[in-house]
Amino acid sequence: MPRGGSGSGLGSSSNTEEPTLCKDRAVAQKPAQDRKNIRQQAASRLERNLRRQQQRAAATRAVTSVQGTICDRSKEGGGGNGNGPNGDEKGAMERLRESLQNLGFVTLKEIVKEKGYPFPKFANKENLIQCIVHKGQRVRRVNPDLKSPPSWRLRPLLEKPCKDLSRIDWSQVCGCHRSETGHGGVFFVKLKNDGVVVLKSCADIAQQVLASTLISWLGLRAARCRIMQTHSPEFQLLLSKLRALNCKLAAYKLSRRSYALVFEFIPGTALKHLSPPDLERMRLTPHPASNVTLMEQCCRTMGQISAMDALLYYDGDRIPIVCQTRGNGGNIIVGPGNYKVCAIDNGANFINSSSEIGRERAYKYFSETKAALDTIISKPKEVACQMLMVRKMMDRYIGWEAPDEFLLNIQAGFIDGARRILEEFPDTKRMKTFTQMMEKVDPPIPGIKDIDLQFIEDMLKVFSSTLRPTDTTKGDSHNEVESSGDTNNEVESKSSNDPEKNKLFAINQVALQRVGI
Image (cartoon, rainbow, N blue to C red; front, side):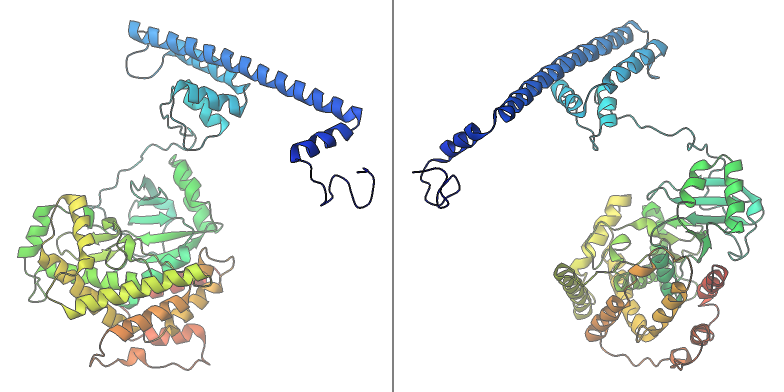
């Protein structure tokens, strides 16, 4: 068959030769210069692999010799005092580090594999060198410029909160203490004559302000908060005081975003730090203002807070009733003496139902919420299966097996909280008004675009379809306000009947006016 015809050739469908023969024919047709280039590339590749093997062998010998020397000196007493390597060992380790810098990533990876060291979590070149030098041991590296010695130690039961969050004299800052829990972005700041405030910088400031405001509107105790611009003179004064106290880590973390949160400090003990004797004392002590015990009153309050968390898809980070997670007993503070319950570190999550997966997740969460409500309502005197995770949480934290009385009061409070939510929020108009107030701020508050009022409206429908209507009549605070009025006047008319209940909203309104409204 001829080679050059239009109906034949290497790519013709009538070609019946084997694929290997086609490949050989294509190589044979290449010009001589191309074949020469292929041979040169193969030779350079072979030479490069040989050079890499020699470098790897030399590096392995260097690692073995240096680490062997350090081991021998440690056995002889030269560096085995338990305080780390001495000067000679540090010099040897630095020389080893310099020699390893000349090697490539693949070579370092093979050395780690040959030595049997565990691979670091993030396998980049620097971490591989660190792994080889320290023989696979994890070494925490801290920037000395950001390491701040504690200038003051927090005493949760003895410190007093700041009286007025809207007027804080930051020139009185005398100490800063970093929170030992969470992601390390929460700092307690001590003022000389004005108590303690809590500062936090995060990516969901709008959700936290919204959740704290809604809990306050429900009549429950929540840590008051306000937002503060990081480029304002007020915040710059705070930064200068923190740097003067050598609290550079706090100054760095709080100034990363355009806003920071100022929280009220709540003295007391977190739920996860309560001891079994404290809980037993609560069980036996009657409440001074009612005919129930302190434990019953606290548990019902926690259940009502959990109902609001279920509305905001935040149930898994406090009392896990709907979301069957491990829970977080650190977000509930029990006050000293009076055992009043306060919600801190509030937040809101929303399921984006724009995709098919999101709609499935939202439907699953709505079904789980409805199932939890139906189970508790149908058998109010029996512990619901959803409450078992609460019992496990208490056992994990303090080794206390929560009795049925503890769980029954929480689930009763959960139902009461759901009913109060329907009474207080028949729709999302008030939430929408407050969200619009935050949207007017420039630059935008972090997390404002993630607030999904449609999700909250769907959750309100789940509550109303499950709970039976009550005979509770709505007060004047629930009257409709004409939509043509001013936005701020609308919210004020909604909340003016109960100033004590809406103290948090007043503080947030002042803060929003400060930052641009």
